[in-house]
Image (cartoon, rainbow, N blue to C red; front, side, top):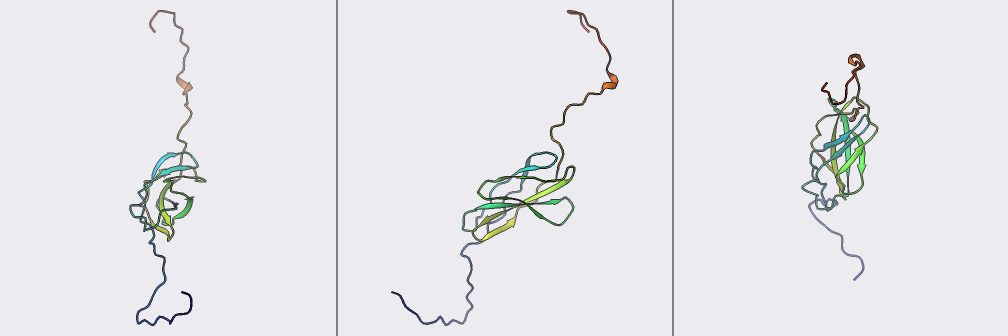
Length: 142
């Protein structure tokens, strides 16, 4: 039935809070591919989702040896992979990941191993200094 009730009179404080906790840390991210301006990462989901399903992930980056983590990418679903773009060539980066659920972002993962952004597939180079003409006859060893 509807209506007013008597106010609650209690000696203990009551804190209104979300019934869920933040998720635990995801697995350490691994670089699966990279180039001069991006890194592709994968990781495993957290063991503890805090009682609410994981809805996404936040990827953070920092230059190795520096203390400040910067948000680098956001995954808005349960996918455990991301590409981090707009990186500077020749710089060594570390990455970490936070899982997000209804309560918000959780604890960060362990930092990845350092990854240097550099071209992964270099075109072949020929050293022309030691080239010399060679004449061969069919069927004879050379």
